[in-house]
Image (cartoon, rainbow, N blue to C red):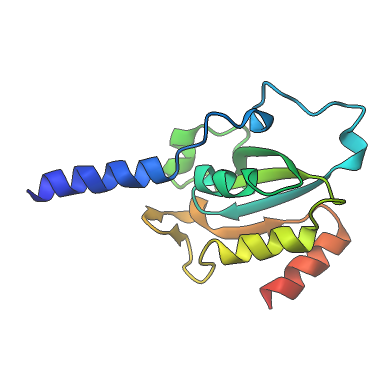
Length: 152
């Protein structure tokens, strides 16, 4: 019975992080039009499972694209398996391309801080490991200042 419960719980956890299939704007198959690229800004957050983080930010008005990947480590182009071995130093990240006329960096920071628990080091829910740590990678000095402000 415990094994059945574990299987069902694991399945439910995986399904909760599933990506919507009808949101085409976030796929790599639909790159941002270079003529419009200058109007967008970028935010990069690590807040646990990148699929879960991606699902949250895809629904924010003004977010044009959310891309998942790894960063902050010492291995170039790591695989999922390498990151899961916890030896690369990488964290699961989402790069968020957004229109600052529709959503501000501060609003994205508020969502970031409210949708995960930054007080649990190297863990978000059932996901455990250094790749799930809470982190903001800033792209300019203003983002650094705003991230520090919201952190405190």
